[in-house]
Length: 271
Ligand code: HH2
Image: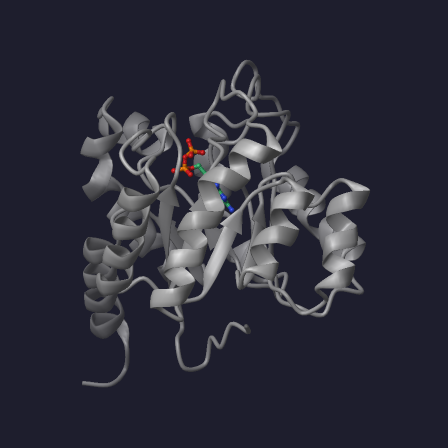
């Protein structure tokens, strides 16, 4: 799979969390049946790509065993693959999970830990053309929000992402960059990174923005319940694309697609 940003200037990535504990929809799509239904609904709603995850990375989340992650993911992936050819990204840091999902027809790997292990790199050398998303995170999900600190958050994150591009320079698939909103960052860090999106975009790689329903949106709106952060998340997705992001990772696909269509149409030169 390749990202063709000529014919499709931005891609809406629909999130499917097959977990009991995700921060905004934990338990809602935990059974294979409900996750499959949700995935197909998101495709109908206009998702350009799905992101399937079976391990929450919310602050304080506990790791999941390989067996459990595979048990959650594989039946859902298999069923979606049989019913639609929508591109499927897998949100995992586990090399075994990466391999099994690619073998079953997954199209992209999204690793919030940026393929740091030798085993994860080995997967990429066996699947040279698979698109990958590398994301910045300070610390790990268990403790990342305890006391995030940066000298200069934009410089640190940019530097980290460029180092990942160098590490992966022999990889032939697209490399997507993600500043990792909410992953070891305060509101001030998130806002600074968001405003610096044009700088990240200028590095020359597609940029993915994942702020949907996150605490950042809650902090800005005063909404403590993640489910009430839809409007704020949509505004952020529109702004991200306006600033040059190519992929927005969202839970509320139908509404985000509409908002982006209207925003793009009103900004484009054509009538
Ligand atoms: N955010 C989450 C998970 N994966 N991947 C990328 N590339 N960028 C992100 O911002 C990102 C991500 C967290 O959101 P969600 O999957 O809804 O929650 P949880 O990790 O609790 O399952």
